[in-house]
Image 1 (spheres, rainbow, N blue to C red):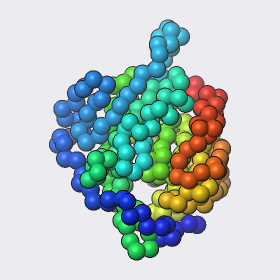
Image 2: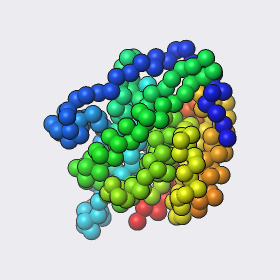
Image 3: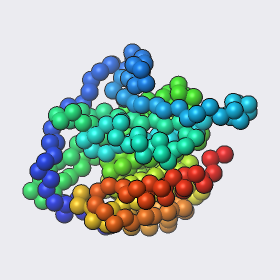
Length: 264
């Protein structure tokens, strides 16, 4: 098991943040600004796939690819990757509700200590609650199929997805994930022990990480793959020859993997 206390300091990060207070309710003041929707504190971008006459004929809803960005960016960051791999999917890219001083966003706070970076579990759980309150409505409003959802996250976004899949029964929230793409992330320390309590039979993961990642140890990939496989998940892994990021050849591999994924 790896420990975040061993991570190096990242002096360029600014960890001060304030949580957006826009709207008293998650769905108060729901409105459209071009192609950006605002849903209380949950901002997102939705990109519709080209019309599919077959789907229109049989009345099927479009499978959804839900995207969670990493620390310090926003809902625009992973759109090029999502659009490339998510052909035929409704792409919904969410913005983390914590606003950073540098203008970016995050899903949870990070504390910088003399020994490294420590993720804050409490703010992560707050963001999980916000996401779960908003996401079913967003998918429905955009014409997506809540029973065919692929989750994709990078770094903090990947950690969020691990936590959601392990800690919650998402079907109780009206969402049925069928697969997950986790890049440069890790299973949060407070939910590692819960993995053994949940089965992932017939669930598929694509997990990728940079071998020379100096923010999240590469051991996170091995740990997640071993724990999830033991619980019945079908796991594809790709250790990349890079740092904290995703290589173009890995994107192509994810694209082929997602194309072959059975979503019916």
